[in-house]
Image 1 (cartoon, rainbow, N blue to C red):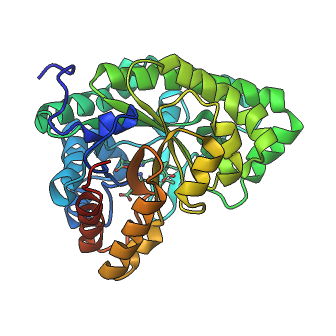
Image 2 (cartoon, helix red, strand yellow):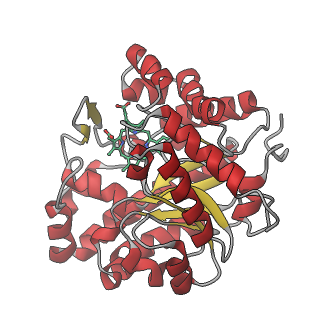
Length: 348
Ligand code: CP3
């Protein structure tokens, strides 16, 4: 199938473009993952990085939630940190510890250890997986490609992994902001090539994850995180719909108004109606509390109704406010998807 053929279920793509849709499209952030027994089964055969780097396996786990949950979009199985490895930073995933960079980049001199990779050579496995997913889906639902924002990618690279306070990153941001800007720009360059490579391979939308954008106040987000992010978004502009996701970023919404993206994806901390008051006429994605999927199913359904009502003032793509939690029962995830699909089906 040529990558230009529109998918049979094009609700998600039409909603991204701000068109009126018959019902809300729904997918789940991190919908391929440990809460699914089928995913855990594949993971028994391969560690996380091997899974990412084996296109057949990555394609298989990408398709699992489409089949099991009936979501309206697939998201390619990969990780936001892969381009940093391609830039020359050693990346490990230690069971239970999450990602680690044994040699963090913490000052200007360290940046020389990184290079601008040929993305086809170093990240071609992601593009191969994308092509495979497009072929196997045969147009049932669109496929989303993704990456991290330069700020969020730098957060992991500078800290050496996940962190509670990101002290190394924040120390650098206050001590030598110009030096940190050089790193963010390098990451932006690779991200532009990487995201364009995903689009060339068939990605029909791109989501950019800013998991740690909320560490910054609005003024510092504007001066530190926004310039390289804007460059990434300009570097892929006009090709496919784009989504910007920020976690814990209610205080940044005023700044997000100006972002050149089609969709703003937000967490659960502010109701969608309030988000709309701040950002104006934008398509919103979100914002179900991921922990609420642990609630009994009738409570999930009640909360889905509330989310639909809150979002009804404009374009809305139903999703979680952050990634699905590993403890979520599969039945609850299914109930969430079904509730959105049934309860939002009315003339809009
Ligand atoms: O959404 C999807 O289904 C696609 C796959 C996807 C993964 N990571 C797979 C994954 C996506 C979109 C991501 C994005 C990602 N990766 C983000 C941004 C989104 C967010 O959640 O904020 C971040 C910060 C990362 C970096 C990362 N990767 C962390 C912090 C971890 C450890 C998480 C944990 O819960 O242990 C990972 C590992 C990872 N990425 C897993 C999956 C399925 C778990 C790996 C496993 O043990 O099987």
